[in-house]
Length: 177
Image 1 (tube, rainbow, N blue to C red):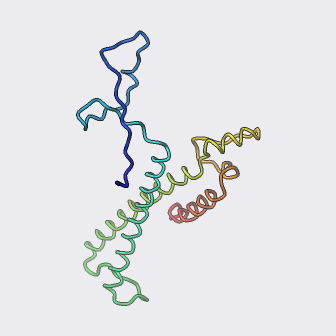
Image 2 (image 1 turned 90 degrees about the vertical axis):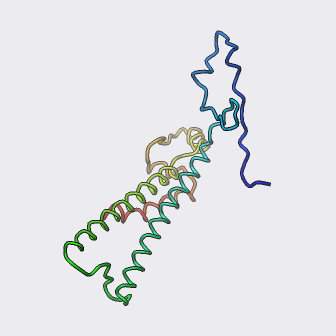
Image 3 (image 1 turned 135 degrees about the horizontal axis):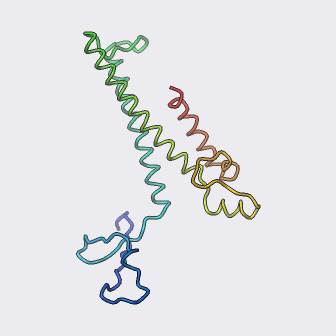
């Protein structure tokens, strides 16, 4: 059995049959014609999109970590001593300036990607679920929706609050440098 879920396909309504209240043509989702017939795929759930965004953020963080470790290993292997300053390049000033500028651009690109990924995941983690919003409404309270909010941290699960705090603490050095 395949580990992948089978996505249920829906048939499109007959386009030749029109009723006076027929608005299907303007509201139909994208058509999947890979099977050679007019079918549509159901929309992806918000949870599936959330998981995809979190995995993309994780992949970005792992990629940045691997580039940093590879650069460190390269520099240490060139210097031969882990306790001394690691030299990436030893040569002419012009070449050193170009390498330095290129490395700074690479560092800025990687830190921007990492900061963007952590920001997106922090927004997802700090956002209330429907159940949490309903619970707040039952208590005659409210929650912020669609914006980053420290106020929501009082009403979301403690595991998500801990994850949010850890993510913010790990992202702080990127903001301060």
